[in-house]
Length: 123
Image 1 (cartoon, rainbow, N blue to C red):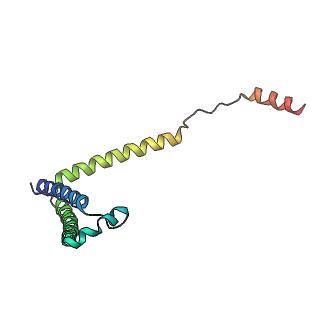
Image 2: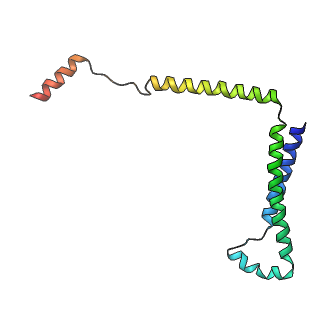
Image 3: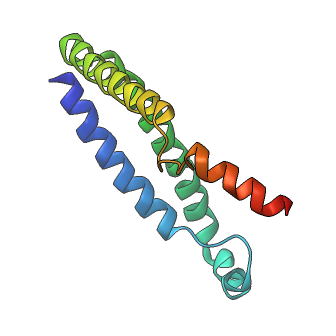
């Protein structure tokens, strides 16, 4: 239950941080030249608030992520780890089999044809 609540709160905080970043005015570039007159009329406090809000939401996401990790169900984690180990073992077996058997079979010349080829080249 706590894990689900943490995930929901992380999603809400993520949406809020996206909106806060989109609302902030750019600090440099061509758009900043047009926005310089807005700072005279009190937009400076708004940008300070948005910057503090963005950092706060980032800290909230970090803290909730740690809390969600601690609140995970141990049984689900063990099951997930077992599945990961099984998949890793299967992948390693596949790699070992592919290393042993070449991807393309090599064509071999019979011994008699190889000697005839050597004699023709020597003449």
